View 1 (spheres, rainbow, N blue to C red):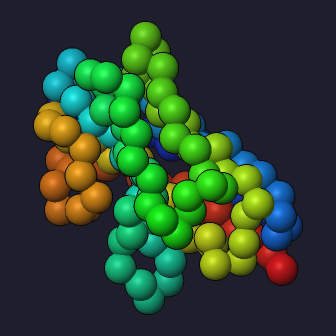
View 2 (view 1 turned 90 degrees about the vertical axis):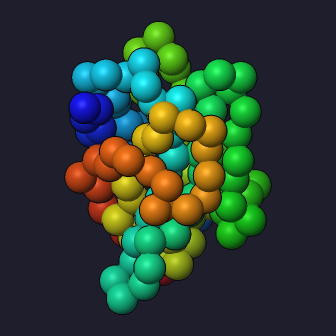
Length: 123
């Protein structure tokens, strides 16, 4: 099993920044890729960004490209999501996820999930 714990959420004004962290523990050698998803009330879970540990390649959703950056530290099994120029529409619960194969943008492909961290952007 793999355990994922997110942190770093909170309340921020529009235009501000937050950095989310996701620490993985357990059988982390099977986590080939890790990703961030978000879910706003009444909406489906949405892909935000992902990173592959094998080569460090990343993939970012068009909706946040240029504002959000995913990065990772394989030595500590920690993934980060730097969020800049936040907008009210970024308000959601942000989830960290992991899977044993290459990254995808479908939440159904991810085997392990964190508990989520709330991000609220005020206008």
